[in-house]
Image (cartoon, rainbow, N blue to C red; front, side):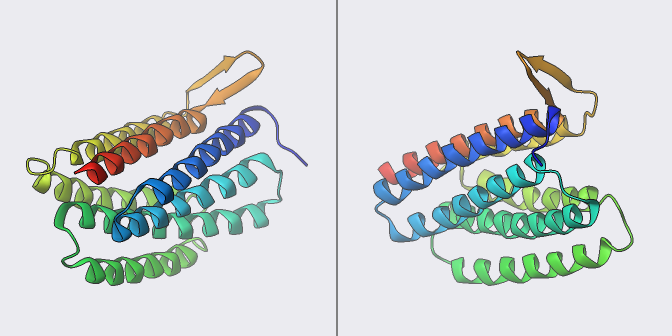
Length: 215
């Protein structure tokens, strides 16, 4: 059964993000000549695409609570790997290939550990999103630190920083549960607003990738 109201709109914004991300992936694969840059960003964007599609399914289809809980855990797991892949991409852009393999290994281990931790925590907590936000916040501090350490030498990193800024603002707005408005027949809430900011986040990252490739 297809959802309605804000859930339907949230699913629609996920699908829009998925379509745009798919286009960006094709552009990265076609335009980025650096093999390593193409690889690290394709992995990140590919995981983001999967998240958008799965998010559209979760919001767009009515499931019973047990199935929905499992789907959210799967989504959190993929998001954990996506965040790790973002760190790896930023490590490459700020420090080059030095330490890249180590960064991949560390972030894969952390993502696996987090998935296991979330699976355990879900038995005791009904609302696990807060745990995930804390996990993301720790990663964002690392990412911002890496970007700031290189932004003077690599101006294109400013686009990555702007992207992170949009993500942070979107995450803050997502906590404002009173956000609710209509555009025509469509009803938007805090989740749809968050997806708008995640799209801006992805677009900024893409511009940064293209700027880096030109140097």
